[in-house]
Image (tube, rainbow, N blue to C red; front, side):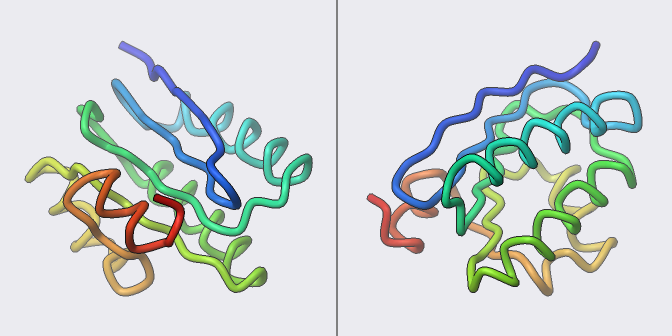
Length: 116
């Protein structure tokens, strides 16, 4: 199926809307795109919108964890929102829930980060 990614920046926050499958094949390109934007813009926070994400494996967890390490150095946060029950379970089983903020939707994420 692949992965469709919509990226946009609001203030110091990168919003990433994912659709499809975040796996070994698609995570490499996503990681590169995020890294380019983080080097070009003053990105401090990242919001992963997983509303249309059908699948995520350990490579997807690695993408989030790697970006967490980047934003943590800048004093920023990772927020994940619109979690299906399957993706929420992966977030909990992987332990990511301990280091990311989980919100219901993008609006709640924007409010939490003060970019609304």
